Image 1 (tube, rainbow, N blue to C red):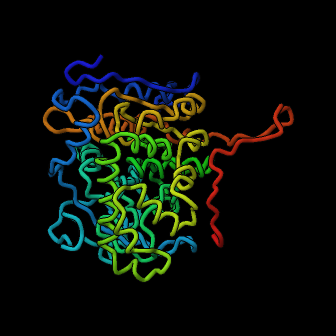
Image 2 (cartoon, helix red, strand yellow):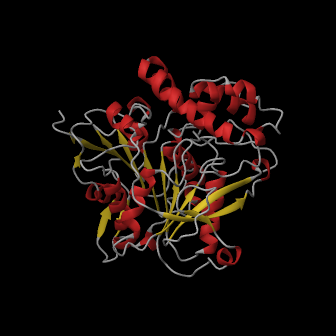
Length: 424
């Protein structure tokens, strides 16, 4: 039982978690690191359940001030053409662009041309949630401890297309299985900063995208570690459960639907150029699943929104992860619901550890005073990995391959796509 906001914490993991080597030569494992990184979860007792925690995010808290410089990337994958925006955390400046989110300005062309470096500072690549962006308060709560008090992290945020005041140049907003932009940024970061250990974190829909990306990369993943926060994992289960309750349908589905419709309206002139997108019909939608029914089917060729949800879910991708992976979820999350969490998949994969808290809501975990509890285990885990672990020994484990002695003639591929990309 939870008393006065003190949440229960549980870890789900394989019987033999991934072994890791410290810089001093001693051995540890992924579970011990995750447990060591996770402090007691003491939340605001007045925010006594997941609904209240989640709804409290509507209170406009300015949060920590983080400054960014933006770079527009041209997409490299031909079928997924267009541009997307990446915001880099920089020192405070006074030349923010009024067309961008607060404290954000563009990189000067000459400055970005000189961004490459041989330094070995750890670098974090972040993905936000549905319709969000680098300006989100929950991102900034994580960024602050990593860049202050000698934290020394380099950080960038990959904005979903059309989000954070970025332009829509290809008739695409988001897709929970669209891993191509983050893949391009990771590849670019590895080439531009060859000595930096790369880590990544995703929140909500961004966590689902990141989990899919890491699973797709498998043993080729160059990240040294990753974190998933508030991942919906199984989008079809989450969608069905949301529709079954009054709050789920008429509050959460309606609010998320309004948020994506606002993105559509912000870029209405751009979308009118694409005849396959029925803007008028999209404007008549109310709930997120209705928007997905009209938008995802038109943009990506899915026959129904449920086909999209099944294809885009990241629950199976957990099985394909080959790097240290730490997931944090709240059991009372009303959006990324408990029933969608793939507990058995985490037990099956030694490269993964799932931390669940009995309280916390969706990307909330509000403490007394307004802080967010999840910032502590995130920063602790990242700093521990970057400073204590011998990262040269952190290499993706080998992909599973059928052997001659295998009793099975079939093989399950956890990242098999139903959505085919032609010409990629």
